Image (cartoon, rainbow, N blue to C red; front, top):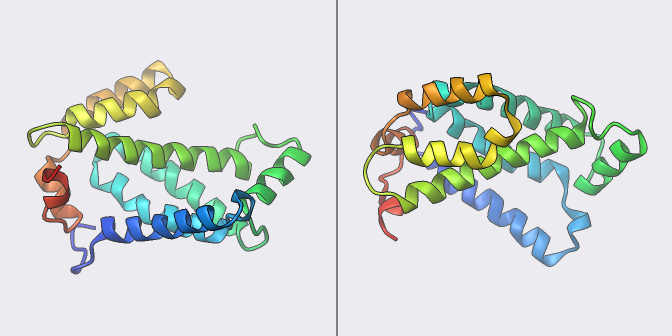
Length: 178
């Protein structure tokens, strides 16, 4: 990601999710296809990698869950059909079920959303406070003490806002103009 070759990952992510928004707003939510959702979610994966060691586990977990959804999309057309299959098979709460993986992907997307909201709401170049608040809001309630402590220690190794924008091939204007 450090060498994005002129690409703007944040723009690609925004465009992919705008496309999903259009689908949801123009059809019933029951028609949300799994393949476009998993493709859009996959574009978010590199953001975790840009955050360094504090979010390495989240990155690996997120990538695996998105991969599972992409594989599922080869035989399952929509998100509701996927969830209905898991409900019928009584596997919703089982590790590795598509529905449980969807929940984990949703949390990952929520984390990125809250992180960028916090970046916009804070001054300065440090990502420690925005990332800590985003983690506390999204992931911490689902993690045990040991994981929370490890993530907390990793917060000191986060890149700066400037470094993150450089890794994402962004000039940062979108984060400084409110």
